Structure formats: structure tokens, C-alpha cells
Image 1 (cartoon, rainbow, N blue to C red):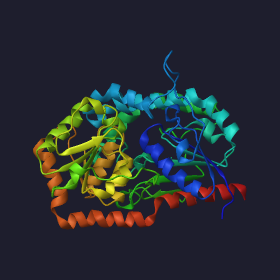
Image 2: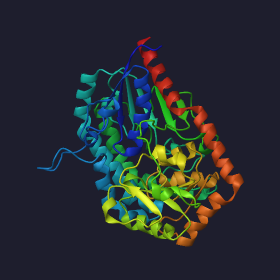
Image 3: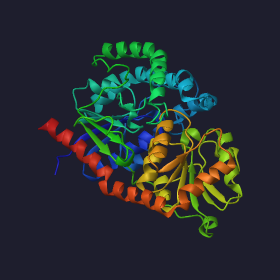
Image 4: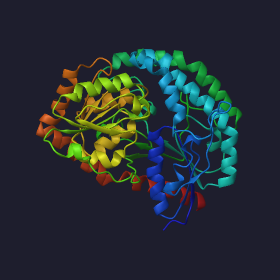
Length: 432
């Protein structure tokens, strides 16, 4: 048995990366280790009840007079709500109006919290530092401790000449469009990358890889099923470990509401994630398409839950224990966030995908082209098209069996334990 170690996790403030780290951290707790979260401050009080220590950071100063207590992940909910009109643009146009501004917000947050992180590391004295985010926080890589990177977004984040560019949503057979997207990415991002790279080095960290915003670590983990992976076209070296899934086991139990228990119609889970569900008009358009259909629908309503009513065949709440619900349903309608995408396939559920921003387009395209779901035009779909996609995914028993079998294989690979094993090895090697 590995001697007790101290693991310091710093996840991105959004629910996906934080929940990924919660799942892995809970497994480390079971093994007798100490787990500390240097999460963003709005997670205060959410992680300690799960057994973790909280030593949190602010990514920006709070407006004068604002209460310290916030909804978890509020920093990004507010930001995404402000820019969501841009989600209607093609991905190549989003580079300037969505992707680059998100990078800049992330960079500003990294610079603001750098002194806080150095203080946290001095207090916690971790044996291993784990970051689940998309950009460098220099304090994490200059602490003299093993640094582990987790990629819990689509793994196109790790670039290669023979895979589509990240954030593009372009298919593997659309190579002619890859070059134009990469050219526009460089135009819209190089000056910002150059400035950030200079700052990273001024803090004592190594130079960043060309046009990338984060280093690799002593070990690197990524969350993506083998059935969807890109390693045939973009091999990874032996520092990388694939976690086919990383499904937390800390969600509360769930019992199917009485109004959805009876009936023969498909049981559907509908979630646009904590950020995407802020687009109430889009939520309503999906619900309208489902309202008089032969469906029973569980709706993750999100932060604006009080701004829309559910049809009679739907039930929902602001927060739902997603990992307890997914095993019960027949199909998932999702924005294509990496957590929901990989969790749906973990439980062998076909998906209909409505991507909005960031890597959601990449996930939607990959699921679509590998035959595990259907990607639709998020703002262009009709009610008939959505219903046809549901019927397509559930109407062919051989397709349902294909997705179910993929889920069985993913669960057998036991991603949480695989992640904890890799982190223990890093800690043991450092102490050895």
C-alpha cells in the first residue's frame, strides 16, 4: 500500500473539471490520502462535505459590497451569459468573439491568483499537484513538486497535424477546412499567446509550447473513451494515460419521479450544462419540440430554472445528480460538454448533441462521425428534426446495442481507479 500522500487539485471553476477532480479525489481519499482543493472561491462549502480540504482562490476581485458567498462556478456562468449571442456564429467566427475572449479571461484569472496559489502551496505542502484546466498557472509548475495535467476537455486540445483543430467542430473528412481554421486561430490568438508566454516565463516557469497555453506534466491524464479517441491519427507518448471515463460516485441517490414512472415512451435526460442552460430561449425550443411527443423527459434546468415552465411530460430541477440519472434513461440530449458526453457513453446511452461553444463542437462532431449519436444544428434544428434524431438513435436495436456495449467496455476499464493509480505512482516515484 502506498504511504499516505497529499494531493493538491486545482480544477477550472466550471462543473465539468471540478466534478472530474471530485471523482478522482474521492478515490484517493478511500485509499487514505489527504486531498486539498485549490478551487475557485465560489466552491466554498461545496467540497468539504465530501471529505476534502478547501484552500480556495479568487480569480478576480469581488465588486465592492458583494457578498463573498456565490453560486458554485458563478464566475463563468456570468461570463458565458454575457457572450451567449455569439454562440450562433460559425466556429471560425467564434474564434475572435468567443474563444479568444475566454482565453483572455482565463489569463487574467491566472495572473490575479498567482500570489494566492504560491501561498496555498506553501501552506499545504503537497506531494503531487494536479491541474484540470486549459492554461498554465506558473505557481503549480514551479513548486518543485510533481505536476500532473488533466485534460477533461476534448483531447484535440493536444494538437497534431493529422487531427482537426480544437474548437473547430470540423470532421475528420474536412481536411481542406482545417488549414483556414488554423490560420484564423493564429491571427486571433498569437499576440495574446506571446504576451502570456512572456508572463509565464517571468514567473519562473518554462516557455510554453508553440501556440499552446499549458505545459505537459510528469504525468498527463485525459478523459475520453477509446471508441472516440484520436490516438490512431495523433499518437501520445507514454506520459499520457487515457481514462475512458471519470464518473464521480459522490452524487446523491435519485428516485424516478412518480409522474415519469408510468408510460411506454422513451425516458430522456435533457441537459445543456450549467453554462448552456443560461440560454433560456434554446432550452424552451427543445422543450417545445418534446412537449407533445411520446417522451418522458428529465430536465436539468440550470441557474435560470425559474424563468421557464416545463411541459406536462417533463420533470426537472435546478441541480440534478446526473450520474444517478443517466443509468435510468434511454437517451441524452446534451450540449456536448466533455463530462456529459463521456458520462453518457460510460452508461451506454445514445446522444443527440446541440453544441454551443469551446470544445462542445468537437465532441458533438466526434460522437456523430463515430456513430454513437447525432449532431444537430443548435440554433437551426426543427422540432421534426429533433424528433427524427431521437427516433433514429432509439429505433434501431443494433445501434442501441452498439452504444450499450461501448458503455460496458468503458465501465470495465474503471477510469477512476486508473487515475488514482497513476497519481499514486507519481507520488511514490517522487518520494522514492
